[in-house]
Length: 149
Image 1 (tube, rainbow, N blue to C red):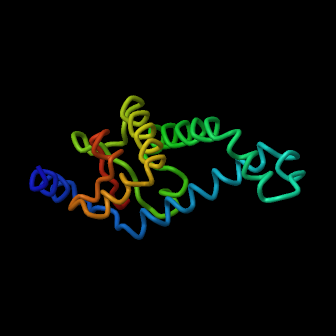
Image 2: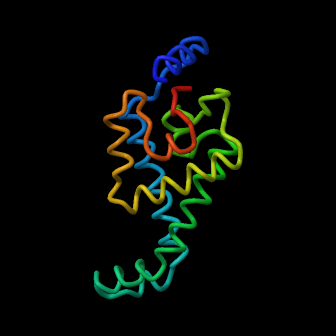
């Protein structure tokens, strides 16, 4: 399978995105989403007097935050083939079969499995570090690759 994917990448003149670029894109996306959460919680967050109150407040909205992450990931990957972090880092998500941006079902699958991987101590991301095609669990599930633009 890896040889078939490598041949497909070679034919299309595409290279896999580096771990460094993917990591930076991840960091950018997480910072944007965290900022959105703080803005959404607004007064409640700024009125918290202790770190414990902030932790309790963010834990109260953990499901909403996960839903926000799924919507963000699915929408941007479906619409643009990349999240804002990936756009900044000049990488994108493509379906292996078509080498095009993922459709709505593939994008949603990828986003949901990504959040599940995050809740399982980022094990799916660690998997991607060891995978020759740099596929995380969410990439494997959705049959996608992250490539350079």
